[in-house]
Length: 322
Picture 1 (cartoon, rainbow, N blue to C red):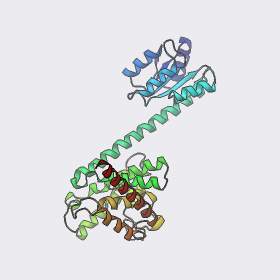
Picture 2: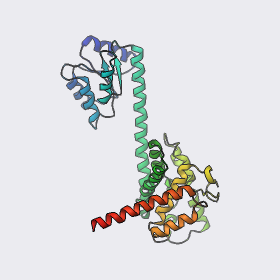
Picture 3: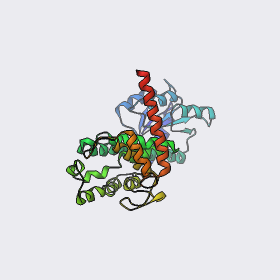
Picture 4: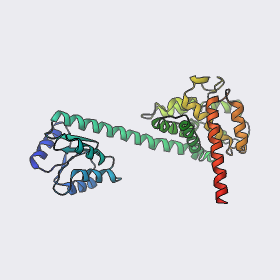
């Protein structure tokens, strides 16, 4: 943790408060020194005075938040008083919170503890993002014919999620779930995944296990619980004839119903080991035929409008380019 304040007595008091709570503290006499220290020493949090000898704390905060190497560091700005204008200025500069003088020990330690907890949560999220991409690449690396398909499924699933007005945080989760929906195929032999003909009953049984295996793989990761239902149930059918649990209708989680449609469309319009790609017209026809049986009818209707809109845009772009 780094403290940058204008007066030595204030610095000493703050340092004593924080060290008494078990925090390791570095100090800087001005803004330039604070930025130099941050470039050389990893810090979880900066407590910065709004008034410094060389530059104000707002500039220091802005510099910290704009630099890629330090933008993740929490910044608490020390204000001379509880001034709404100064508080707003601090937040606009990127401060995570403000502390007013005279500093109350209990309040300061509470704010510091909260910011450090948020930082740990952010680290967990970033770790999950990295694991998501690593697992998605692992699936594609095993079977070259599937390269890029998970990304396409995630794209179409997110487009459909947006069309049904899912909020941004849900769209982010949907994207991750779609990207990882087939992670369980890591347990299926490559020769089965890449087989050119019809699967025999034993091989199909292996393939049918992949949603459950995918759930087990992701279940071991931190903060992945919201992805699990979509991964487990993306092969269910609304008529109850799907797998692994034979769920039907709205008992199938929404994300799973969305991903099932996107997955089917991408698979049908891509070259697969067991057949060549279908035309978009053929794929649209199959989705229409399966609406209300294999796939959610309302979602299919929304999805086909998206496909039609995209085809119109593509045709317009082609005419413009020509």
